[in-house]
Length: 130
Image 1 (spheres, rainbow, N blue to C red):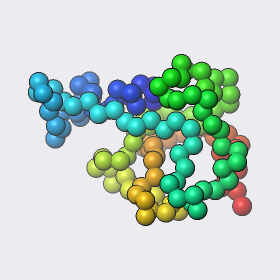
Image 2 (image 1 turned 90 degrees about the horizontal axis):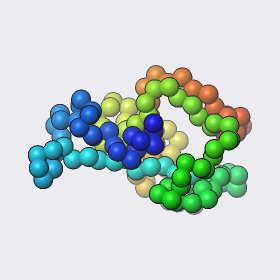
Image 3 (image 1 turned 60 degrees about the vertical axis):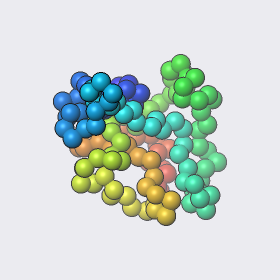
């Protein structure tokens, strides 16, 4: 579902909030804004900010060329039950609440969910271990 929301965008006509303060297209329809997908590791632009990148997975193909094959059969790194969204450009009060990132190059790419239940892989949990 996240892939569908990313490709179509949350500004679709089926979204009940899309018409509130939204821009209109050429024929008076709301502009559909797709979200930028995160495909593989998103590293900071400054290499000095990179941390333990030697075990990062590398996508075998680009996002557009993938046929829903990358990662199939592997354990999930993250499972959430609530919708994920890109907080960039929203009015959510925590949209710019990031800690521990070098913000000189702007905010990092991120996804958010409100009140999420999750399952995380051991690799993801060990990422922040001392």
